[in-house]
Image 1 (cartoon, one colour):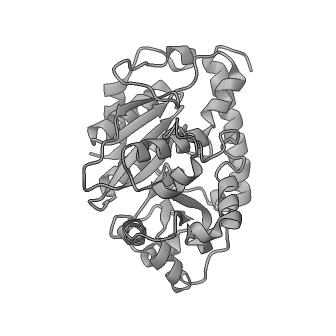
Image 2 (tube, one colour):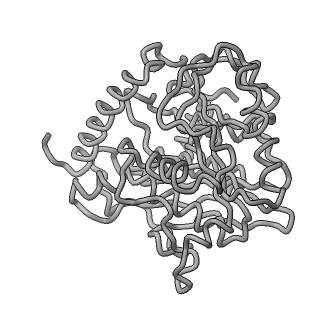
Length: 347
């Protein structure tokens, strides 16, 4: 089935009667069959690890922000990951649906993930008509990251590796990550290098870094993996063993929300960090040849950030970090307007 046909099928399955632009957050579908936790989330497919599964790949799926993203980039890229990523037997995936305001998109993603038997939790927008509160909540990605960590360790995981939503892990990237996770040692946090895909190319689990090198960016802001030992050392409140916030929830998307923790770890706790040389705060000039990155790829693995516009490829302008930031700012303003329309307010 082609991706456009899949999307139409999902829409037909999940279509609800509430028109998009009269939708209010207080009308968001509630799921009384699932228990909430301390993060205001609902576990729709609870995370349950079998005895062989000890490690979690966790991704946060948030709102598509146009024109930075295409309208359906999250759904298309998530379907691609589910179809092509090959996790080792001792790994499990966890998805956090983070304050997705469009009910059709929310239910389309949920249907897709449940169809594949994936573990899913959601963070819902607060039942409020306060546009400022809703905007802050929708961009609180760190709240979703903290939820992923707490759910993962509550389920018994030894490591939780956090990745941006539309990130793909080829087999050669998973090998060093799995090697680290399985080996006891003194490294309690892992930095995973990140590269952006810039062209619509044939990509699969067997794609190698050398194959992808002509079509990707230089190093981007790295991703973080956290061990249970590090998490429990930082969480000193024994009365709340799985309600700890490692990421600052006062920082919103686009305001160094992940970077603040990366900076802290790379400076104050370097001795605990595996692959500290993978630390990149924003973007780094691309290496001249793939062999220049050989050590870091073999030791640390990597993730490929899939296309913002998977239907037609990435606009050339998005290869510039400066223009990406400008489009991100424009897209966040557009999202603000969408929230206002949903609340029936003029703008």
